[in-house]
Length: 120
Image 1 (tube, rainbow, N blue to C red):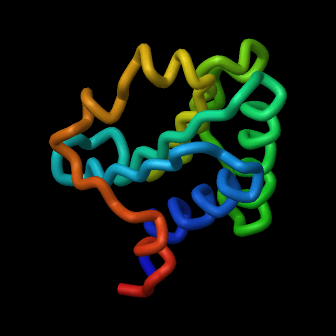
Image 2 (image 1 turned 135 degrees about the vertical axis):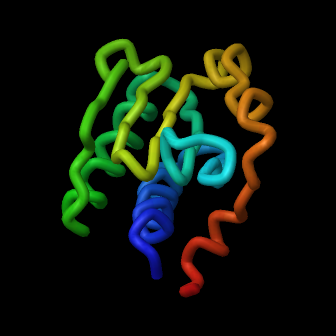
């Protein structure tokens, strides 16, 4: 499995472990040089958003991956974890609807999170 795909799979599992809602994976590698994957999810409240982010950080660290930057953790309305090849966005429900990253990045390829688990 390639490294960005493995990282995305780990992040998705971590989000789902904390009951992340509507976990969406977008392969943006052919439309942007920012990253290979954007992962988008939301939680019900700020405590859940922070728990989801904490779990992603913990599971990624166990696998040897550490974020380059984290933004928005204190407010927990839109938390961004930048792992270079994979960017994880964890939103409150209202903020996710407002920013609508899925629409902005619709030129990317939407990937079923279960497909990330499969080797290449």
